[in-house]
Image (cartoon, rainbow, N blue to C red; front, side, top):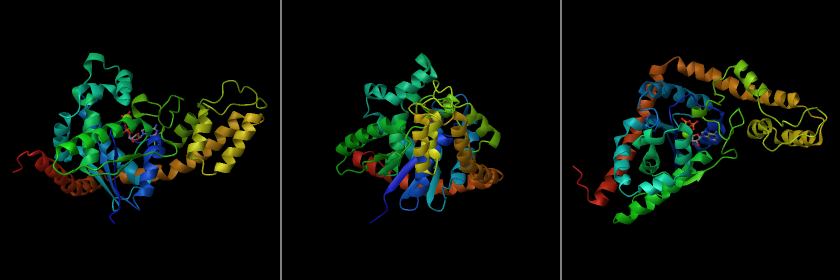
Length: 333
Ligand code: ATP
Ligand code: MG
């Protein structure tokens, strides 16, 4: 039996951060051993809310690539490719747009939330509104069955399933494959400011390339329990970002469990908890920072690697497009 196929990706809107690491990257590194994995740098999707700043998207392509390699994605096991160089994805998007209603796109909770967050109002770009449809094209073009993502992406997977169902029903034989989201244990890492999600757009990130000093400052400023004034006071774990991060990153789960009991009973200070967290983040990030700096020294090689992956992806995505067109009776020359 063939290995199941994975498609996942990131918008090149900035360097990758710890939210990406626990939400998706860590899974990708493990899954590339057992799955046929494609990772898409979604530059066209990045442009949907950066249409006036294409330079930003372009500049961040090698940054994201270097983050992938630094985190352990192996280009010999994973096909890394560029969305804008895969025209089949844009063509499938055009075809899918006709089977999705405006009302359905407007109901998408993630899109609704992002529109409000970005304050678009009447300046909302059509492309941004339609990005869930383009994401469905990405997933289905690769015939992916599994999509390792953070939980903000669940509405996109739901919408993709509906598109697959509808499009297959229009074809004489089903062409598109059903997919499912793969959520990690930490499917939504809060920002270092304690807000709901660490996100490039919100400026509350800790990059995989963060310096020792930046890590130190971020952990020192982290929100704990505002009522935990004296070390001897009982402390609260819920909503305490330091403990959320200890859960997400500390390799010794038993130690974290013991710290929680101690903190809740009183007698464990915030400083000690932060020291423990800082030590584990320093240990996690330092080797990635070093590897990343090494990869960034040769941007030409990074882009050559991306070109090789994209060429491989062209064949796969063109084949799916052709099957859909033939099924719909669209002339294929
Ligand atoms: P932007 O603000 O430009 O949208 P982003 O930080 O949300 O950037 P994306 O490129 O949109 O990053 O997301 C790429 C992948 O990483 C998606 O699967 C997303 O769910 C996941 N992800 C992003 N942020 C987090 C987070 N804080 N926790 C868990 N997963 C995350
Ligand atoms: Mg995002």
